[in-house]
Length: 216
Image 1 (spheres, helix red, strand yellow):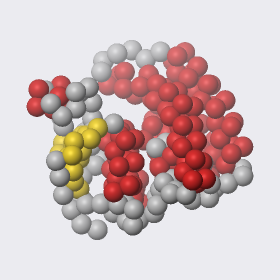
Image 2 (cartoon, one colour):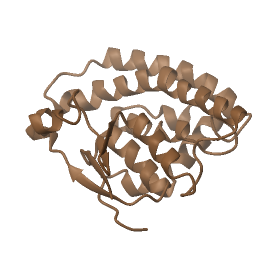
Image 3 (spheres, helix red, strand yellow):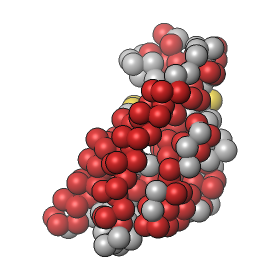
């Protein structure tokens, strides 16, 4: 059985767990206690040299980087659950475009905004509201383009959900906790899209913490 090593509420761990649930892939979850710096231990670093969560062990294959793991899961289990990555040339190209949008135009701003107001205080560091406001302003401008795209189609790569959409969930859902309702007020298309993603069973299952799922 595939084993997922990570922190139950870490953004990247929940990104992988969401896809595992979408694809109905059973997995054992091994908790890495980041408060005790287990992710910096020699045993952990032997598998994940950057000391970051998560990584997986799939019958001896060690793989890290959450987006890479998600792509691997989709390719290994093509008949489980929704497709999530198109296999035709045009569909794949549109998916890669959408995945690049998330990685280049969403994550750098949303993740830093969340880190500024949520993760810094958790680590005993002071937040800078001005930095947060600038990041949210930049993200808002990026979401103007999302509003246009999603006004023409249901999801970022077309009318079927893909990994590119799901990749937005961990940090996008934490933006409200950080102090911005941007994801649900930006515009009708973005709001419809993001609310629908948040209601998917896969996200509902893992959003409050990842646990082992040995059968479906």
